[in-house]
Image 1 (tube, protein in one colour):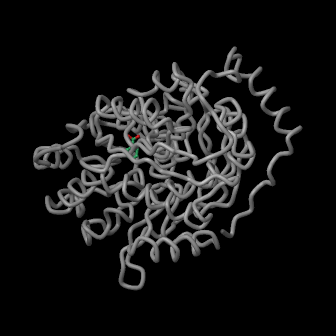
Image 2 (cartoon, protein in one colour):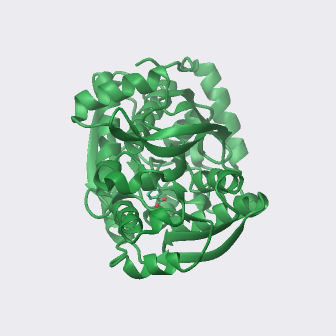
Length: 407
Ligand code: BEZ
């Protein structure tokens, strides 16, 4: 798999790690969780993702990225066959609640992965915590779950929503302009983007002059929102949208003539590979920050892109990378526990997992329970006749601060 992984811990090392983590977490009972666990037989993994609605394409890519990685392992880890049980959470916390109960209580999965929307993660947080079920979240970036609402049972293999807007706030103030208007969908992830961008943009000498919140999940007619942005006279727009909402926003931005008027910047999801073909020329020139780009030049990314295309019949996107990295974390975690799925052992095994991902160096940070990885400033430009996010600058490693001190 072209990966440099840490060698599996010896049994003695593992017990030392498990013991110290249990003390550090001050969680009596965590290592004696009463959920059934085993070290043999099929390894059932619950995959809770949106396969319908505005984030359907994200769910599909995350699933295929995971499947690609597991297929290369012969669908087996530590001698146990892997069984992925997928459920459509939509973008609805109530539906997700029913589906997670089915996965855990009927299917008896060893742990759960997936979850795209921060609203869904917030709705499931207490279920994971109270029932001592491990969730390896492969997208939803809500800052709170690395901070005030943190629980040892939720770890992110994706990002936190603080990261992309934090990087763009500084970069935009230095490279694009001094006054900004923010446009986001009206839910937790949008709010995270407002707070984080405002903090770093202001710290770098900029001023946020207005914030626009659009209906979530469906924006409806974008015309009034475009008229509002056009009237602000700001130096730049910062926007967070993903999936089909990103297509709607970027196309409308172009069609209403704003692309000629005010530079558009955003968290990289707004012009990611999942939406770029549909956005076409409307996306050209959009600047964004993200932890991966299709054109990122490293051996892991080159191999991943080739393998993903052969597997899925289409180009990879960042969500496929997230699925692939999630599977890599699961692989390493279960090697460290020698296939045992007792929740305390799984949690202890996560601390410090690191490998070379298609996104560059990846390390799970035990404080924020989310990855440390590089951020890249990107610009949509044609490469060999295809629109790609060309890398303008490697902004270096970023890790969530684990509190609200920086937005
Ligand atoms: C979120 O809800 O946290 C989210 C959704 C789509 C892309 C990125 C973040």
